[in-house]
Length: 166
Length: 250
Image 1 (tube, rainbow over the protein chains, first blue to last red):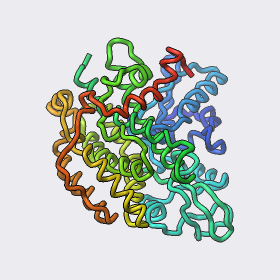
Image 2 (tube, each protein chain N blue to C red; image 1 turned 45 degrees about the vertical axis):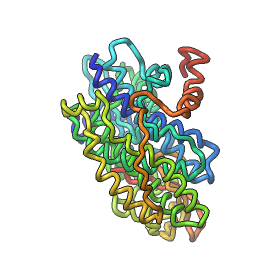
Image 3 (cartoon, chains in turn blue, brown; image 1 turned 90 degrees about the horizontal axis):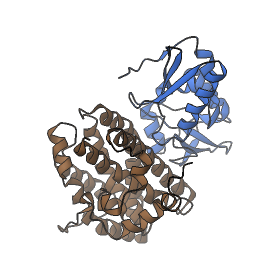
Image 4 (tube, rainbow over the protein chains, first blue to last red; image 1 turned 135 degrees about the vertical axis):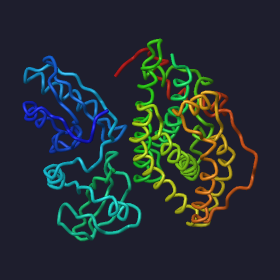
């Protein structure tokens, strides 16, 4: 059983940082927090990744992309999908949150605020276009399992909000 | 093979598989774009959960069955889902009512499964519960919206709850595999969930201004493989590719 701590061999870090989330290309899988460990054992890189959502179709692609990136760097690798501890949006790094916002996806609020905006219609999610908090929920589910759909009532921009998962 | 554990996993997973298929049927057919996306997202979560369960089942089965074999190549009588989840999408109120009646149970069930001494099952439960709590929020929200909505939406919501009520008691029925797994502290004692389930459902229905059905006649059989006529049609759709092109892969 793994802990919530990541265990990444520093030699591998630059390689893994080049692999991006196929559905959010601006975000590296390291900033997403889905790689839980990457260590070299007997010349084989063992990588453990954890899914954001159980049915996330990106996971298979991420596994393949990691293998490919490591192969190009001269490593053989084995990818393991682990479920525990379960992924949480807290594992998205500050750099990852910034990349999301720049890409037009509002980064997750804390759990309480998240509930307020998704269930009680509170206007707190910051518009990724103009920064206004005068935004409303359009749909509890968005273009992927991890997002909800919002619209800004000031600049009218529709945008995705990355739901808090704890 | 650990027969009881295998059957126990299938009992849990089949509920998500069949409900996932039902929700997936709405892809492109939801009453609005937002609800369409919601139903298919819920379906995707459920299928993701199913994969975790079936991968585990495949690991402990000793006849080389893969997760796809388990999902696609069983006969109707070998599916162990409750009757509730196979009920059709008669109209949107039925879709929401079915989801709601299952979500309230599913959430309570996973909360207990997290305590399982089987570390794989507890890890899966730990993962799934985050998704399912969002499903429960979505479905109970819609029950309230329809129940406390227009006269027509209220009538339809009440009709759906009345019709589906007869399938709720089966959620708390124990199979032999269930009983064996409870003794080993692997499984959840579903009989213990019953009281709180009906309290919680009644509380939410009251908020939705929907009356709690009084009927005490309950239908069961799904967990033992005796299904309503709807499952066969669902499976013919679900299994079509594997039956037509055996062993095909993506």
